[in-house]
Length: 158
Image 1: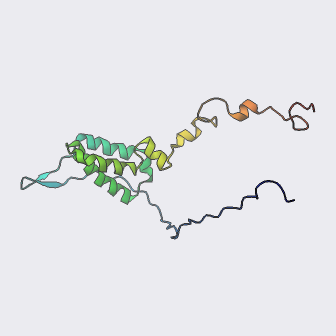
Image 2 (image 1 turned 90 degrees about the horizontal axis):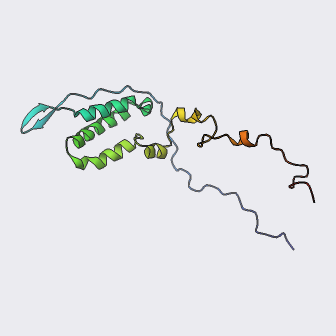
Image 3 (image 1 turned 45 degrees about the vertical axis):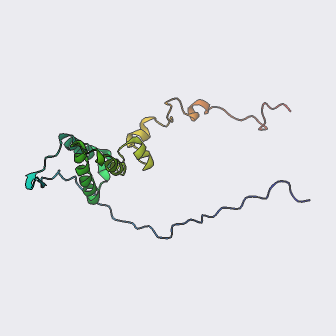
């Protein structure tokens, strides 16, 4: 009679490999542009667009954010277009809220967005000194002096 139990599991082969090869780009960091001055048409006349103060603060927040260290020119241009949507929202156009939320999520605006994008803050990596998230002693510190008994089974009495 053959061995008992199910046959050994075969090694699974990934069948959903990417059909298109990845494109590797040269990365170039770009400096944040200033919020531009421009004119808009209002009541048939061209008038200077005034950025809401809240949008100016929001723009500075992005410039100062850790994420901005990884922004290229196209990222800043996309964020600049997003600033216009932010200005619409803070000027009373509440229909801009959904688009604004989607756009800032792409940049890691909230903790959930950063988790989805697999972003972590560098200080967080070393802050717990290897003790895990609880801040208590590590397993090595708690159990480092424990050794197994001869025979490897419990207290040695058989």
